[in-house]
Length: 511
Image (spheres, rainbow, N blue to C red):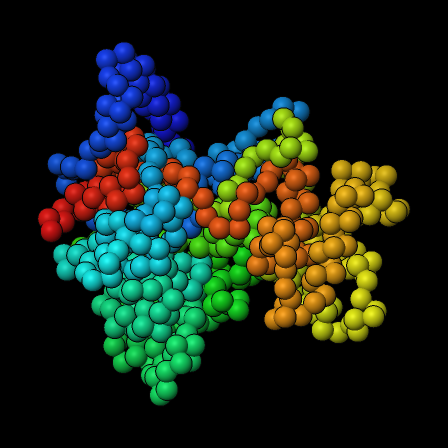
């Protein structure tokens, strides 16, 4: 499909050769400085159709694990992976992600770097680290230039990453104020999740106007049924399209929990392309937000399925590139890495078994519901792990050694240590989450998640030969892929603020 891989390898090879040559003449410090420089100047024409795809929490491990999972489905006798399409784009780079507070950043600060080109602190939306100066995201500048603007996400529309493309706030937690800025924006298409605090209740406001009413007064058409969403087109006007089914956090379901007839992230991208279509062009930011959430919970399978759907969403934009190759730019990156995902586990040494993840049929979030229901409907004296073993087998494929299926499914039989870990986690999960108090060692085991669910994820992950190091983010750099007008600017190594600088230059923003 692409003429990409050979070129990418050639670039990487050239950089390696150059590094060897330069190392003979430059000090280590000078060599680092030489490779920190990047070209942010585009002298060609500006594209009409610009897409920025952000995998929240996505870095090299998330991409590699998805490709290895897909490759494992081929059932070959030697290791094989199936490349995600966007990894074959011609422009290939890597970006640092640190913010003014830490080498381990959050989505607000890294999102601000991508949207506005500045470094800021943890939790801050488009303001400097001192929270004194507001900065305009690239979307406002492009809107002033005549582009239509779209913002799409699989999580809530007022979450940190989408927010940095339309809001300015001291804290990413100011959900009501953020959503008000969305409703008062002049942008053209918002799609995917809903709103965390549309009435200001969580902000403890009284008589606050519903942001949906504000949006409608400002000319937005608000739709939330599949039929209404699929009926949208470039004559629909300014639109807020909310997925018909949302979770408790006002986000779309995980891909692996999405029913065949339900909408996915790729559907909102496809529809956004139709809504935004016009003679002057458009800019669309698309976030796959639940890659991050899955990795926070150390749920590798959920992360992989959302990464695959992220690729599907990108391919909707690629159709635009195929039709208008000289007028389109697609950039794909992550804001940071989440979970410290590692391909490798001490218990499996040099082996991986990605096909084992196929046994997982639901995300941790869906299994949490099973635990919650059992806890609420079973008296404490009657609560037994054995009662949930059928559900565990159905959701994760894991079975006890005593199961009659053990002989034919040896790879999924629980060891004595794993059964002990599940028993301890089950005991904790049967306690009221509101009063449950974990020890410091248990916090390392379970994080803030349902002990039984996260333990099941860990067991299956480890059987597959992968693991996580944290429930937070990590300080890994993120890959950058690009195709289309100005793609060559994204080759090499640079800071995440440079992505913004490159986009500004390519789209001819001068201020």
